[in-house]
Amino acid sequence: MPHAGFRHRRQTSRGRFDVAPDTPLLWVLRENVGLTGTKYGCGISQCGACTVQINGEAVRSCSLPVSEAVGKQITTIEGLAQNGVLHKVQKAWIEHDVPQCGYCQSGMIMAVAALFKSKPKPTDADINENITNICRCGTFQQVREAIHAAASA
Ligand code: FES
Ligand code: FES
Image 1 (cartoon, rainbow, N blue to C red):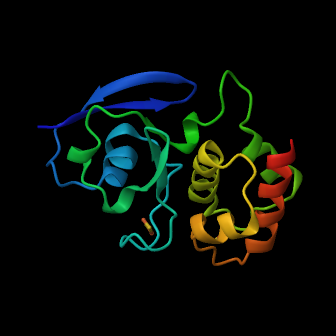
Image 2 (cartoon, rainbow, N blue to C red):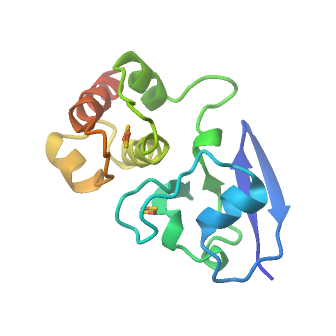
């Protein structure tokens, strides 16, 4: 049975869960670990609602077997703030009133925070290429503005 370490709620913790190795990581996070900030949208790696970071890279957790996450550092939206301080992407999201219904936003934020690791000042082309998350509320322009604001922060 696989087990994986999960970082969440401002601390690092590990959990051991008896689940089938091909269980999608998203379900383990939500059902076994109890971290429900990561959302289920399409289930086929298209919408990005389920995006988490694995070893700092954005991954769509609905399509990743948990066995492939074993032993890696998994960061969910619950673990993005550090020591009570919001990530600069979260701050920009608040300042720019990005969320509407909010359903897609944790995945969007995790994808953007991962992008900043490789591209601290992403261009519009970088954003188009890397942030392919879908927002049914159409917040794309606010997302873009907040990304540029966070890059300048
Ligand atoms: S729920 Fe994973 S990409 Fe849509
Ligand atoms: S804010 Fe509603 S789906 Fe994106």
